[in-house]
Length: 325
Image 1 (cartoon, rainbow, N blue to C red):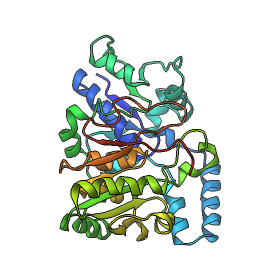
Image 2 (image 1 turned 90 degrees about the vertical axis):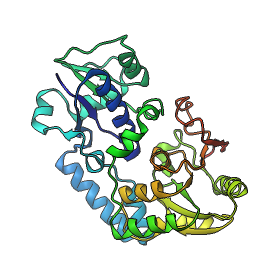
Image 3 (image 1 turned 60 degrees about the vertical axis):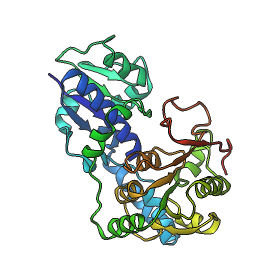
Image 4 (image 1 turned 120 degrees about the vertical axis):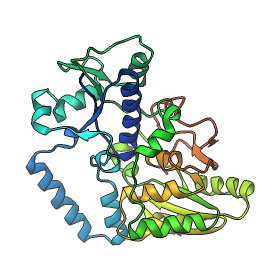
């Protein structure tokens, strides 16, 4: 029986949602899980160009700016945070028709077909399989190719996912801030700006403003009393300049270098959370085990509403403006 294949795409938060959907399908069908990373393949010339461009941009910025550039990079981090699903072989992928181009089309085009694969592009595709309304023959590959941003596949198996996802908690950076988060009541705050500020994303994502974070902080302070705010962000310079919160504030990400995996571990160690419209922050709050309060924005996308089950019912929703600043 062919395993469920995750066509990993996007950042770590998106990949973890794909993992949750794949685990649901694997449970329902008795299959294993594998991770295909062909979506991150690029021609050698393109890789060289991107490396040179990042190096040149880094010459004209400070440590915060270089950190911001690194934070915008995307890679197949799913293979680094779990050992349940193995990586596929590149040669075998190409033989099956799994290329960057074909998988990109599969994630966007409902009419796309790949011989030997049953494409699961939407939440509805996965749910139909779980409900038994559709079946996948043993010799076909259930291919999780879309963005499965919903708690519907996470909530029923959150404990299993927490056990499956292995974050780097022992590095000097992570260990220091995890220890700090556990010393007193701490609100982990995720501030995302970097890639959302790109002109290419102008019509896609609102940028949560400083005033919203301050309002969310006041909301939690009113309920919890004196708390400390521990900020994880892709733009520490902006946070230091603009974020005014009602309590002690530490900007963990301002200590260079740190990785996204370490930052996720720090967020998951916090007792309460305030998150941006970001799947990374979503998972930082969802992987936490303390049952604390979470404040999330209501507007995640400018063109369309998010999945109605994106936010767990227990999370507090705070309206954010549909703006870019």
